[in-house]
Image 1 (cartoon, rainbow, N blue to C red):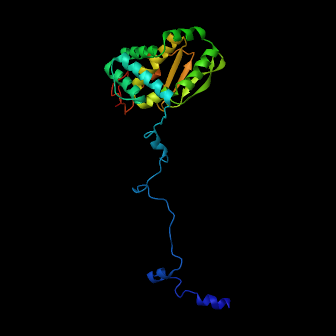
Image 2: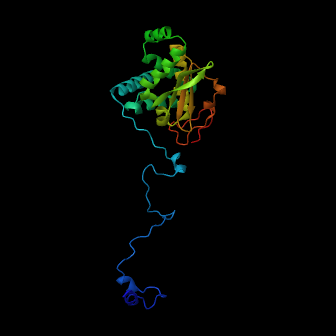
Image 3: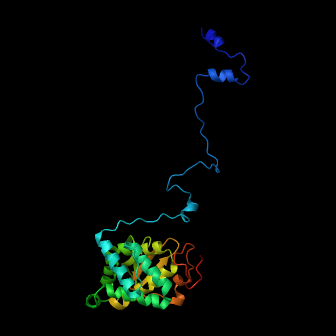
Amino acid sequence: MEASFLSQNKSPTPHLPLTRHHLKQNPFPILAVLDSPPANFRGLKEKKGSQPACNLMELPQKAVYNDNWFDQLAINHLSRSVQAATGLRNKKTGYESLVQAAMDASQKFNLLQQRDLVLQALENTIPRIVLDLIKTVLPQCKFTREYFAAFTTLFFVWLIGPCEVRESEFNGRKEKNVVRIKKCRFLEESNCVGMCTNLCKIPTQTFIKHSLGMPVNMVPNFDDMSCEMIFGQDPPMLTEDPAFNQPCYKLCKSKRKHVMKCSS
């Protein structure tokens, strides 16, 4: 019986390919073939976030901030202080207004004037009596350095972006005196090395040391836009600071020359 069944289903021409007629009669047609798509296939679309690693640095994803009422109040207050110091007003709002105020200063004034104007704006944001009280009550010590670091991560995210406290060695012992900014909001928005160094780094270092009595060294990383604030450490001289030997970004919004020629 088995032999009879096999003989009935045996193909008369097993060595020949199937004709078009045979393909139509095939009850089990081929539905799909799995294969890798060609590299130059133009119709292929990738999902967001799935770009090859080589494109990540070229097309970085911009951080999105949802500023609450306190953040907006602080941003507007600082923006107005910078505009008042420079005498250059703009009609923008929120963080965009702050960046525009800084950009106007970078285009209107020379480097020394930029630093002095921002320092003046910072000093006007906090009453002098409060600054003197902080300087008196919190002398330089381990507690103060760690307090400044923790305070920064809690109350200045609106200005610098998400950050965290990290430990470092200070005078031979461990302290939590370092603030690591994962991706600086101001640097990302301005996209300008010169604005970072002249309108943020130098004025902030000067303000914290002279007004609050705490030396601090800000160490920006222009590759990933991160930054470290090391409380208790004096910054190097400008001629020896690596931050001032950095060419600007190709997409610099300020379109100016800094210590080195802007690469744009």
